[in-house]
Image (tube, rainbow, N blue to C red; front, side, top):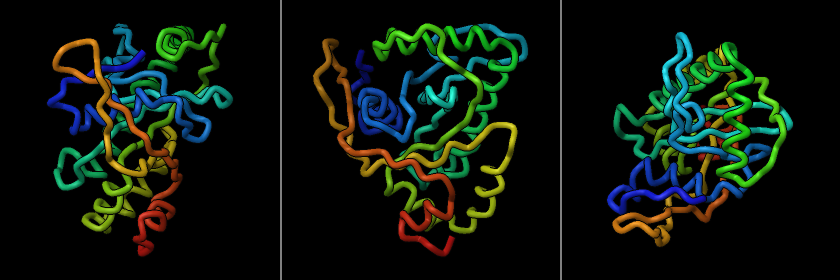
Length: 216
């Protein structure tokens, strides 16, 4: 299954997140993208005290039994899309998923099973879901520019990543921001994809070195 986006949105964060989903066979460590623009894994479920989490992507690590709420960012220069805002958004979605896990683990397992079967064509009897994490995904250029623009935010990011309520699954760095549009069956839309690798970087210090801003 491929996610289709309006042609006018190909070069936006929506287009990039759809492209990452459509290229989900590309490995990200042990993580696998299993859903996109996900309201609690694409099924609206009313749970007491929990809002429907509509994060950009959901990833799953089968061996760890871990779900990851992934926020995708593209424009580091805007307040609503800079690195601090992205981390806060991802953390909030991760917390929502953690609440769902605490309230009804069985339901979350069923939704993961549904995503694996319907979106990834994998038959899994009872997928293990034992923990939740969050991650920020963006092109390398986004992170490099973010760290150059907001270098003093390194301490804040370290503290945020150290919060124990929800684990931090790292920065997911795309080799570039090129989205390749592919023909869709629906007029005015396309099925975007990416052709670059995604590197998972665990800490802000490692990210700084990778982006050639070692002062962090």
